[in-house]
Image (cartoon, rainbow, N blue to C red; front, side, top):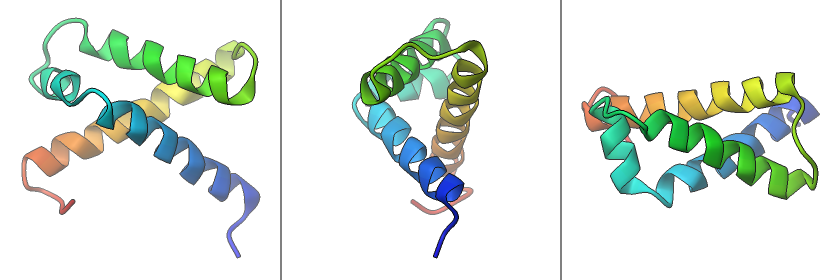
Length: 86
């Protein structure tokens, strides 16, 4: 059985994937390094987690959410390049 932290990480990644899925045009813009797209996703990720847990995130939590959102987007970039399967 997975460790609780691992389950929480999977849940967070699923939530952040949902954020990305809701904005495919923004994902494409992020992949093309267009200005503003990372800030959009950083904000949307924090808002999604905030809504889930019912409180504001502390600075270390925000940074962790940003890190995980970045990983989700990097995964999408690699998929778009055909470097990994969907």
